[in-house]
Structures are given as structure tokens and as C-alpha cells.
Length: 116
Length: 111
Image (tube, rainbow over all chains, first blue to last red):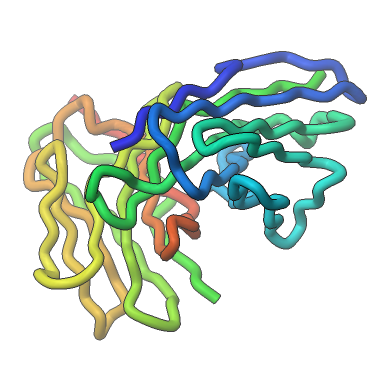
């Protein structure tokens, strides 16, 4: 299994500012994923972050709004830029399973963002 | 494209009663299927998963799910629910660790 630590766990931000969310994993993983969970909604994949390459964004998400860094195999950041109230969501980091568990995605506790 | 449908938005069940949550998927190949639970204020926890083999899968917390290819379904069941099972449940399908989630089913447990 993988233990994922996300920071911050929650934040309240002013519109027009940015928030950077950190995701730290206790083991090396090739792929890291960022999801968004809007209030009362399911999870939607934002992008896939591989170490050493640019993130791959899903339809409807762009790098200018959601820049991602992946400096090494245990860490990634997601920045939500130019915040608006519509960005109020839970943002979750996810990684592939390790330790012979096969195809399995592990999730961090999430970052609850409120934009005011 | 892969997709998941959870027909039931909200289910209320009495403590001790049985629970079944429905999940239907659309996927071009043999799917990897998952059930996750999200308790209030908590992250996602994997209940169980199906990759291949036995179509009846046992998970944690007394949950099981049955994969039925002919019906494109992967329904989650628990014979006797506990008050602590009140949560939101997500069915997901995917591969390469990228998941498509259903809309979720909220389970309320009444005493």
C-alpha cells in the first residue's frame, strides 16, 4: 500500500489568488493523479503527472489554470490559479498501488478549498 | 469511453438490514472495477476490487461485490449494515490507475 500526505487539509482563499496543494507519498511511484470533487459531485480526473514529463490534462482542464509539478518520484504539487467560487471543491491526490497489490489507486485525504 | 452509472443517489437502510448498491459500467475491454467508500470528512478508502477470476469478490468491512459481465454490473452488498456504514459509496472503472467514478450513492443508516 501507499501512504499519501496532502497539505493543506483545507483552506479558505480570496478570489483571484492561487492555492498550491502538496502531495507526498511514502514510496516511489511512477504516476500520480489529481482529482477534483465538486460539492455533492463525484470525482473527476484533472491530470496525470509523471516524473520528468509534463502533466497530461483531461478534457476541460488546462495547464494555465491547474499547473502541476512533479519534481521527483514521491512528490507532486497542484496549483489552482486565479481562484473563483466555482473552484471550491475537494482536491485529491492519487497514486498507483505498490507492494504487489496490482492495479489499485490510493488516495490522499484531500484538500478542501473554499473560495470567498 | 469508459463510464459508470450508479442509479441510486440515496439509500436509507435500517441497522442490521441488508444493503445492495447498484453499479453499471461501460467499458471497451475487460474492466478493472472498484468500490470506494468516503466517510464524512474522510478520504477515499478502497472496499474491494475486481480484475479477473472469481466474479464474487470479498472486501473489507464485510462487503462483497459480484461482477456480472452479461449485465455490465458490479453491485456491492453487505448482509447486515452497521451504523458506521453510513457514508458515500463510489463505484469506479479504469485501468492504468486512472479511474472514472460514478456519481456516488449516499447511504443513511437508521437505528
